[in-house]
Length: 125
View (tube, one colour):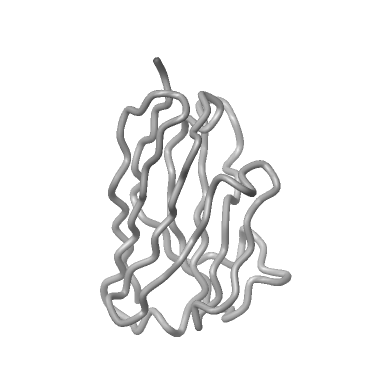
């Protein structure tokens, strides 16, 4: 069992930056790959990033590549999503999720078994 708690969401102006955190409680986080997803109002949930269980590999969605980065500290059981040059279209509720698949390649939405409650990011002037 794993519980995930996100934090760091806020109201930020376009061009601003935010860092989201996802803290894991329960099982050893090193047993899971961790994904960040976002869901804007009226849209499907979109995968933003994935980090492998080791923390040495990651994927970033093309829609945020060059602006978002992900890193994790397994010792602190925390995964971070660093977001720069934010745009209004980044406005969404951001969720972290855990999959028992250790790698990101081939991991699909249905592979993520544990989800956090989400943290809201609003990009607006």
